[in-house]
Image (cartoon, rainbow, N blue to C red; front, side, top):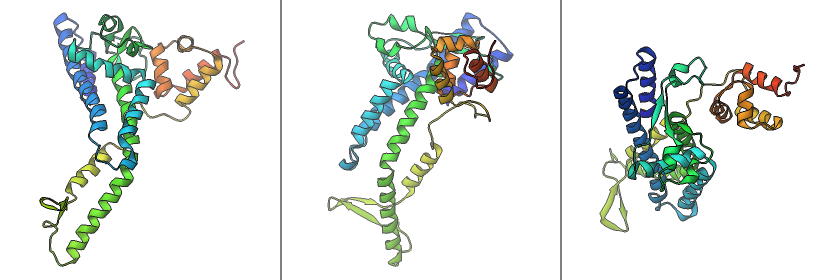
Length: 302
């Protein structure tokens, strides 16, 4: 959220009061760098701690291995997450991540273009020059990498992993809460006016007794409700607009590469990738592609 808010404010300011001096440009890059480094640290902290901090869970859940496997699969399948993971090591030991920005990205043509027309970028060539940077993390990335798109895609992928891990522990969490609620209810039904004195001994030692309460779990429930699904900032799909699967299927059927498909409808390669990843593709644009690719069910070029 901090990165999105910072970049949106920058985009709005430059839309209303465009200033591109060296000094002002450096200040903008510094702001985005700070937010990106914070995000990289948070993501890496999550991926490390979610594996390490849940060793106390029942062996039958196999949570540690599940977390490692799901994060490993995300690394293998998401070029954006792989790059963000490698980028964290780079900013920790070498240099800042954001190398420049474009104040008027003309490849963006949608009505909300003011939000994304200012594009902050990583330069692939600069990262390749670092001999310690994982070269595999730069595969399938363009020469100039859009920071905002990169952050959104990688956080969305990590959020999906988080939802899967939460599903694994949910039955145990519900059972634990039911057990504590039952203990509190039994304590109160025995004539006690408050459950404040209810404790549980650990390892039969009175010194290690812990108070039984549900306040901490109420906080957990609030957090779970606050994060009910992986974050996604794609606009809602309107009636008639194709799904990402439809867009990908039509391109596969036409036998086109992303570059070939994008060229047919006059959009950038990255914009086509966005359509396949979740950004709603305008209905007319999809039909234009179908017609030019010879796939429209009723209209054909002559």
